[in-house]
Length: 138
Image (tube, rainbow, N blue to C red; front, side, top):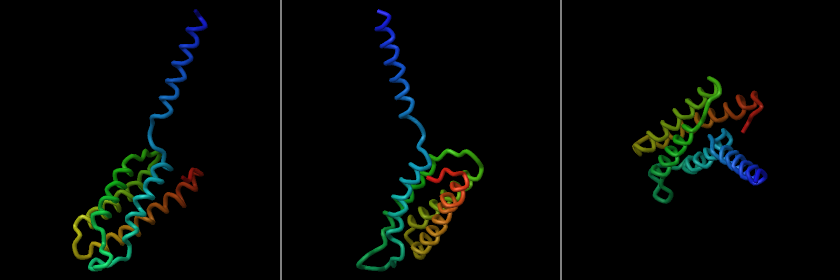
């Protein structure tokens, strides 16, 4: 009888351990992998003219990708002030892209391109400088 109780208790402990390890926050690496997909969707429209009848600028697609990236960016957890500041910069530039693409007005393509350059620099600041210094580059 005692052996059976140990088996059941061991099974419960293993089950609790597995449940606790599968539920948790996304790591920076996972978030960045997802962000790359959204970044590429926005970048595919880079350099196109707004009035091009053969290849029009996809304002709605850019806006949707930027909104998804902005929501994904909100999942990050911060260990220090530098990481929080970089995330704030990334969120700011993504919000500018959402605003510009959402307006779909004159100069929107240039505004999105401008914010994309600064978004790239903000991501590069984290990946190339900050994460390398921490030795945790995703």
